[in-house]
Picture: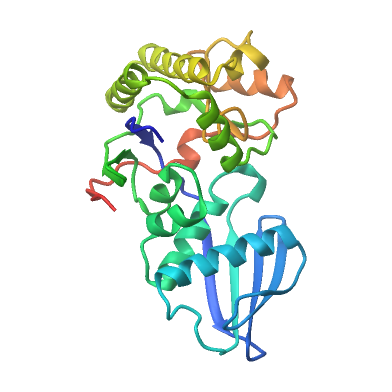
Length: 297
């Protein structure tokens, strides 16, 4: 958010979208599914895009704002009264914070024929790195420069991936809330921290020694803890873990990255003993470098 270079790794999982002619003229029927089945259904007027009915008013209003924001960038988007049915399907549990919102922004942007980042700016206060990841096909360096989102593909495929696990903490974090918290805590000159975090991102991308990689993760975590005035997640919850626990995404919730020289069995046994049963091997969910250069968007 303040211009530091971030190392961002897109996931193999995502969100599918299908659009078909609706059964009723003048309405857009929307259904949303994840791995547990249907979690939202709503009906919107066309072309007005007002909510007519829904299973969750808050979700319906958020979707209404997203569709109207897309129309503000393309006046012809959903501008007639033809009936439509839209269906989204997440290939992961929507509570995991794996990108249900960012992939939806990309879906609607593509549907409307507009840039995802432009739509993101209208509906979110975040940096947009997650929206950038939703259109990327490999790990990227992400940076905000002069109000532009720059991303460049990076060769990041750590040789010690078997020592890296994503662990679900079960605490749903809301990005807009965490962005607001960051804005309140990050006053003052951050130039030194921004420079060091950028250096760490580049060093992480080419580090081949596990111990050095872990040291860089710990340093990054401590820098952000200092800016936010918070304890690290490891100090709070996992102080006896023999390795590194790194916050991901909205700082302090959803998933963490756990890395240890002691390997898979130790990592699994440790977190299972904490009743944290969702452990995903890094290599099972992360995309790897495919030598495609991605330009600024």
